[in-house]
Picture: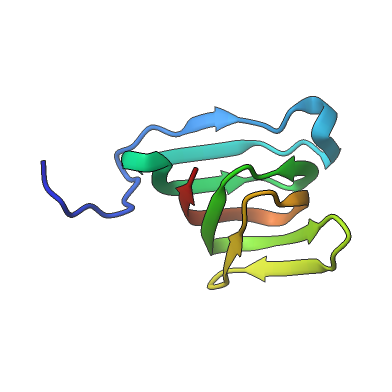
Length: 114
């Protein structure tokens, strides 16, 4: 197996999902997820996409994200709203809790350390 890989999803099948119904605040958000690599010690990378809507979520893992397309607003409980769009990078630390609102269908690259 090669030690070099890209986050190319052209030939990957997307996993389809949605937030749990009880977490949805507005809209009908739907997710597509392309896991590209899963490594040792709970590290994974891939791409994720969501359609418009707003939902509550909490991270039990550390996650680096880079927005590829779209516009979203992420609001940490007790914090201010953070608007993210194509080209923006950010980290969600383990223990993050708040809302994610997709204004325009959003796709991101991610690296997770569980």
